[in-house]
Image 1: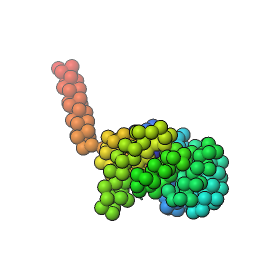
Image 2 (image 1 turned 120 degrees about the vertical axis):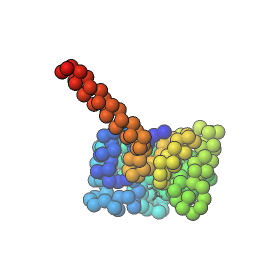
Image 3 (image 1 turned 90 degrees about the vertical axis):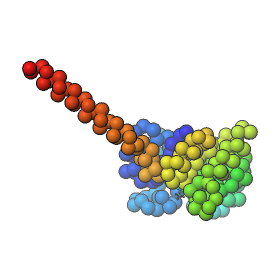
Image 4 (image 1 turned 180 degrees about the vertical axis):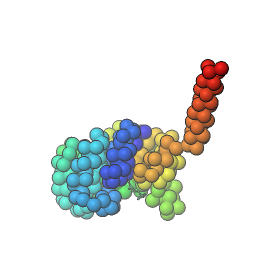
Length: 222
Ligand code: G3P
């Protein structure tokens, strides 16, 4: 599974990128609004930091405006993927932009039928939101499973991008289901490598090693 960071924070992105396992970045208007600075400049800087798909979202809600914004976003950097909300106007815009060879990430997907239509319109990625469904007592992971099952029957060139992943178990479940991509905040990403037994085990290895070295040194001086 490809791992994307869901953030527009350059510090977080630069830190995580040093690990060499970040495949792309997703942003949205809320995430960009949290940062100070020009959103387009931030997007371009993200593209320079991570050489993978970088989603930048349109804010227009009519197809015409979405298409114009999408063209502009795509012109900023070759890594930019145009993120478009999964509404009727968004579907029209996706069809046009995909026809021009631009990569579209259909976002705010909450049902299998929305995902099916996104794929048919030519979206390169579709982003079902797991955590936000869990928030309303609807099992978010079941949506991921449904979409994967549907896409498995056909040849759509549309990757399942599991979004709104809120904790490591969401990541595990998405990977077990075969989601193409999981996008997560830096806090979730940072938790993926942590295990207390690894820390305890490493501490013990190093202590044993130091003890053995000290014993060898003591023997040598006898
Ligand atoms: O990628 C979608 C993500 O930003 C939504 O996450 O936690 O706000 O539901 P969340």
